[in-house]
Length: 185
Image (tube, rainbow, N blue to C red; front, side, top):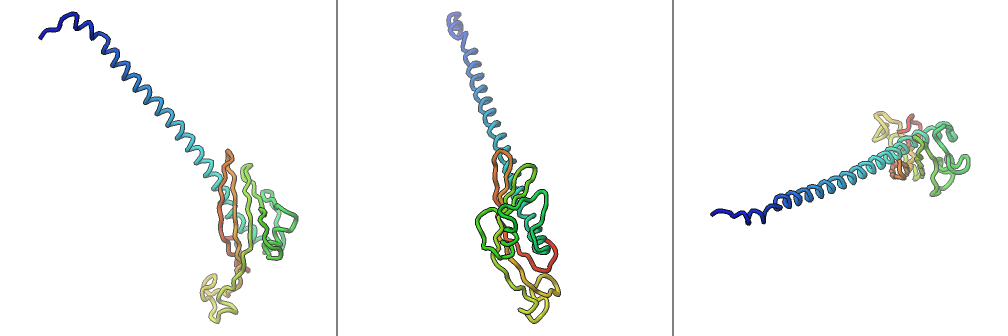
């Protein structure tokens, strides 16, 4: 079968039409990939901001027990450049000692890299540790081997850390301060 010259003239633009359709499809795929990449970059940035806020909140949880321990050991609120006591003078100390009832207001603020970490501390009670007057055998499930027992004060801590771009993270913990034992954690 032979093709006539008239039949070939009718198909002269088909290759160009197929090539144009392929280019349109590839362009749409490229635009879609670019859009998807931009969204992924925004998600990664938001995750980074949240991670910074989480680490700030976590820092508040790790710093506050040391501050509580120092206040109890020294009998007063401790001054430091990074710490701001929110409320009137002595309120934090009175609250952690159990003299004042817990209020829902934030107690202390740490500043980390220009961003705030707000911590609310609530004294939730105290327990007598085995090994002293409560137990006859010294060290029975006490603080350590041969422990003399004592009293543990329990604190509920709620730390709200700020991060870039208005990101926030909230971390909560319970801290057990054993009276007479050095250290914050």
